[in-house]
Length: 393
Ligand SMILES: Nc1nc2c(ncn2[C@@H]2O[C@H](COP(=O)(O)OP(=O)(O)OP(=O)(O)O)[C@@H](O)[C@H]2O)c(=O)[nH]1
Ligand SMILES: [Mg+2]
Image 1: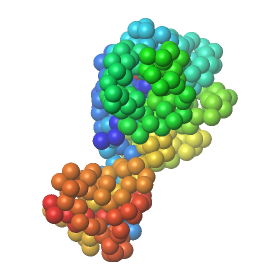
Image 2: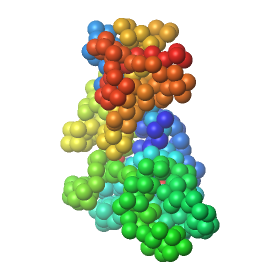
Image 3: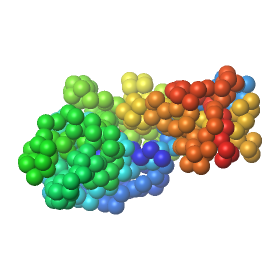
């Protein structure tokens, strides 16, 4: 499963985002380091279900009237302060938790109402652009440290006659989520001595920065948009990084109200409808959220999950089925599974994602929307429904 990690300075709203996005029960409070141990849970990205092209909707938990929710892992970790890579705050322990993440959602307090240590200050008095820079810097320095600590082993390997620097670095960095292709691409970008013994700290740091950017891409959530001065969000946008304005607190309130049966709202909707009885106070709170949603096109929480997976990681959703006419599995469930594959994936890749045996035994595939055979090098598109024919199925 794709893994997305929430990172950011303390008190920015990471756990509120996590709670809203997973509906798990975690601590949220207005002081730094509320979260100590990482929370790991299941959230979803939202897409259009292929069933919209048919007469009937799927009618299960994953598809709410054609709004398809595909599971991804979400990780909420302790806040990060400047110097974390040297152990400040809850530093290293938290950074190590990011090892398995495919992408990072940096939850920024766009209101400027907390300083770099996460302590409450007057709204607008801290510049949120500063936390964008230091979070990235901490991640880069953390990886630099990992490479430094492992360099001796690269030097040792370099004495062997069949030494290959790409292989040696890939070995070291796979644990960090880097593939051989990532390492090779980074090395192509950099100038470096052939002999690892000649590498300086600067060479290792340059490698760390490039590999980090490739393997842990970052998207910014401009959280607390409900109280943020609009110019702060503008300034965050000027960094050139993808920015999603959000109110994690608003999303949490809506999901809780939806569970209580008082509003009709599906995560990612740009508005909601009140369907139950509310106190005047509750009603006023929800109307405030409605105004923020109108301004930004929703609460931003679902939008951030989607941007991380579909934009940053460039995934598409493919739906394997056994029956290409009914779009069902062997048990008759309609569109039971959805896989988030890298753009450019082929039917063979989908077969491997379903099961390694199905991949090994792959024979051919049928596009269930057109009922035609597709070639082995066909590039899957968002929403494709595919029957795989394999010796293993
Ligand atoms: N106004 C506003 N406040 C928010 C929003 N999201 C979170 N908060 C508040 O921000 C404070 C910190 O929220 P948490 O979710 O605990 O923050 P965190 O980033 O997990 O903090 P640490 O675990 O200490 O690193 C709490 O008082 C939240 O209620 C939001 O969208 N708007
Ligand atoms: Mg927290």
